Length: 128
Figure 1 (cartoon, rainbow, N blue to C red):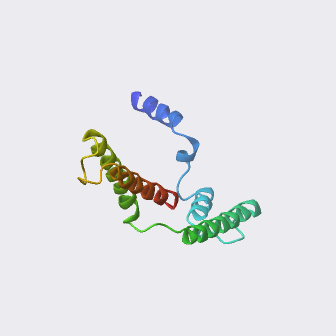
Figure 2 (figure 1 turned 135 degrees about the horizontal axis):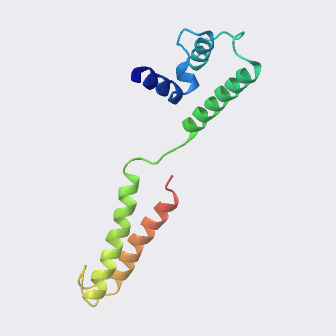
Figure 3 (figure 1 turned 180 degrees about the horizontal axis):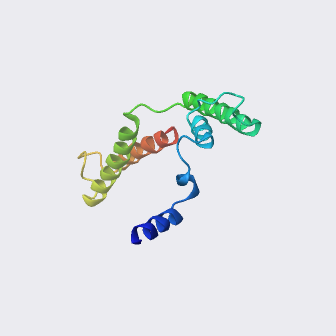
């Protein structure tokens, strides 16, 4: 008797979709739609239009992806390195009161450091 009650409780808990047998006509039709095995007669017109619209969207997206251009792999490391090296150059110049990184040119070290950073910054504007 307890087994019968447990079976009834399990039936009440399972959703309607699970209660239907896999061999039922409705399940076969849904399965065919999901796997694109259905003929055009089995598919309602609204679903057919929706599927066609989705195919068009997929084509447009694939075409847009092909048109996108990217930078070479070396581009980001180069502009990042230029920015960091330029910053380090300027910091070293200020810490050593203009004596280093290149001794003897004094404040021209600032120009070199800012020039490196400027080149790195300009490269960031071309980053895609």
